[in-house]
Image 1 (cartoon, rainbow, N blue to C red):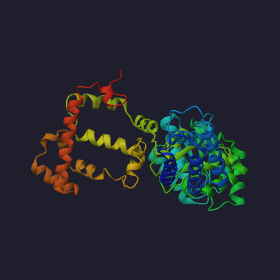
Image 2 (cartoon, rainbow, N blue to C red; image 1 turned 60 degrees about the horizontal axis):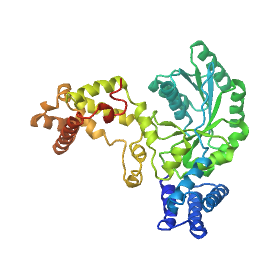
Image 3 (cartoon, rainbow, N blue to C red; image 1 turned 90 degrees about the horizontal axis):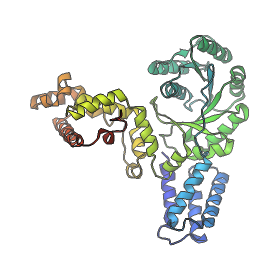
Image 4 (tube, rainbow, N blue to C red; image 1 turned 120 degrees about the horizontal axis):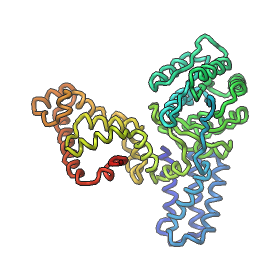
Length: 441
């Protein structure tokens, strides 16, 4: 995420490394590089100039933190200004109503339908709400089908009227259905176009007037940079939306949209999304995003993702097995599945301070665990629950069944045994220190 911007900013800060103090000369050189980095990231020049002017004034006016090195001080100043530019604090999301109506708008291809499914999953899981998805894109049957499939995957009902070509009627009918079926959130996926046109704007405006939504979320493809900001302005002029959603942050994202939208339309970014997995939706925190842009990691979000997938009852059972040295392949596979549900593996590693830069040129596929899963899936239930059963002949059968070389199976078995040995040592530690949330009463 924002790797190019991160590299450019780091290069700018190098101007101050080794310097004993802040001077007009070294600040000017650093600020110039920061401005170039922002413009290259597709941030509007006016915004980039205002940003760097503020950074320069703050750096030259700061006489307090003399104990901090100039490069550290500049990083802090830039971080604070990035946070301010992106909105200072996480914006509140209004899901209260009888039912609460959430209107989703944006151009075709921005990820509206996928986001609608992700939002329904998020509200169901995090807020314990009962959402109803509404297919109001009457022009693309594929969008209706996609929403229906997403609803099935997450266990959320979808309001469909394939023969009805009036999106306002569809939305109003869905709200009536939600009230009758005790659904407390209605998420309306509207139609988009490849470019802004009057017909689309009129249609979504009419839906807004009819349903009076609690939230209007503008969904934008973050890879489109400054174009995304211009589109956001056009939509906001007509809809006065309540917040922005940035999608496809796992792609070749330069950062222009994230850094410019709040400044341009004065509306907060409320959610960020990456990939197709329905779990990959996060509340947008300006301070955490600033830390990630500057290569500081985001350990808070990483812990939150882990806690979201943490099952207390499951953890208690796992604790008992570890205490008795009974951790087996079925338990190991269960832990892998929890990690995969947390999101893109490379993004997760990038949240660890200091790790992001070291892995930026390494291709870490989300399929990284497939080989291990194939090996475990080729075991019998008895073998999974009792690893000591697996002798040479069983390893050959597992190798053949998983499509892996016998050397790969042997290497995995050896690593698993080393992990079990480590767990024996960890048994001497309080379980609460071993794994978050475990050992609690």
